[in-house]
Length: 465
Image (cartoon, rainbow, N blue to C red):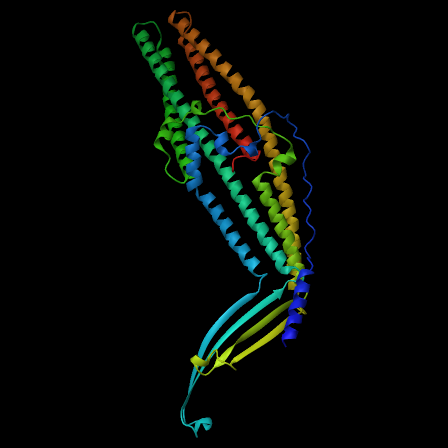
């Protein structure tokens, strides 16, 4: 019998080594994009080589990002998903190894004396002790278990890449939320300054009205401009406070008071220049693209597992132990016994279950291919849009600054001409409104320019190190 067991185990080893894999050969789908960016490339650092602390060097931004990485719930969920996938991978890896268990049992039975079998002996009590060990092993000849393990591995890698993508997105969201808060704070301060200037002008108009130098219409025009600026103070204060709460939600903890009270676009440092590189180099490093490809590989492995379900499964089961009527003799001589039971299971009729499972795995793989291609197309568009924004926003910020300077000079001239009695107050009011509008626009465009640089850093695959 020992010779038979040895031959069976040897045959199992040969089958395992020479087993086949029924999964389709994986080949990365061709990227459905053009080989080059339409926008011109610039010299600069590669985004993927810059960790977020190297790109966002402002101390306040670094403090906010660290708080978010430690406390944000979305990132915490992504990390827990990785841990769950790792545990699932461990379970599928264990299926490839033999399963060994051991049990020790005691059986006690009492028979009354009125039974036929105990009439001559009277009441009888039996006690039996049994110690057994068993081992079972499914031979993965057709690769079902290996493909399930491969699918679990790819799912783990996909969740890991998703965690990286979540972190990348979180870093960008935190910086963008800070930019929004700084923008609203600057607009709020601009409204305060404008209202103060208009209050001073209104006071002058009132004095001139009392002296009979201007009409009541001049006073009403000055009051209108003042009230509008005061209303803007309230509106921008509301936006500033709401932006602070939005940033706090991303942080997952309380927003530091010093940051909430001192946020301003003027505090932001200039971000490093980034190289756009080639599409293939950029897209293969983006965590969301990596996650989509790992999901596609997992679906490919699931096809192999579904195909293997059509073929026989082979398992080996062996038990051995000792049986005795007393605990002290449980491991004594002559109490041992063993069984060996190889099993071949052949699917005969499953009601179409295996065919449906294979069809599902095939359709899922095709769907994942489409999702992978869509992810590449979306990423390509995001980078292209960000490159357009980088080129145009830089020019627009410069032009908006010139516009502000021009309107400041025009407003100064209008005030002087009004004080000299050359022009009416309406000319001053028009110049002041124009200056206020151009200042608001400059702050908004500067904010969009900074946010665009953050977006470019994100879509080029930086920020998750």
